Structures are given as structure tokens and as C-alpha cells.
Length: 83
Image (cartoon, rainbow, N blue to C red):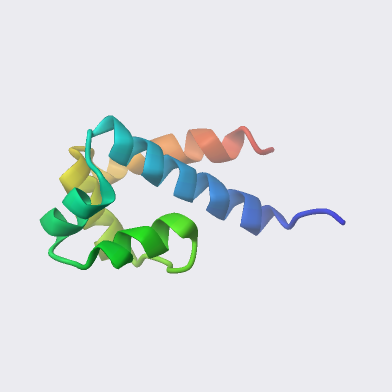
């Protein structure tokens, strides 16, 4: 059974979010504190249990020190590897 492309793309989004957080030397609890949300918020979007809206993604990018535009460029690079 072939895995739908949307699922693969979502997994790449999650992977990128986790990797950038780790490169920013932030643990989930530290990220959550800076976002002013519970740690479970970070855990849920990193596990794929929760989807982010664009404003939440923008705020997460700000905490990690990357612009939303640069994040989208990185995501596009990851997604283009799927094709």
C-alpha cells in the first residue's frame, strides 16, 4: 500500500520543526515557555497529533530565530526531495 503524498509531506514538516528546535538548542519545555503554551502543545505538533495554523507557525519560527519565509524555503527544499 502506497503512503499518500500528504502524509509524507506532513512528516517532513514535523521533522523540520523538530530539527530546527534542536539546532536552536531548545528543549520542548523551553520552547513551550517562550511560546507561553503548555509543553504538551509542542509535543502534540511534533508528534503530528496537532496541526498548526500559520500564525502559530510564525510564532514558533520567531522563537527558533528563523523567519517564516526562510522556514518555508527550507520546507520547500525538503518537499522537493519527495518528488
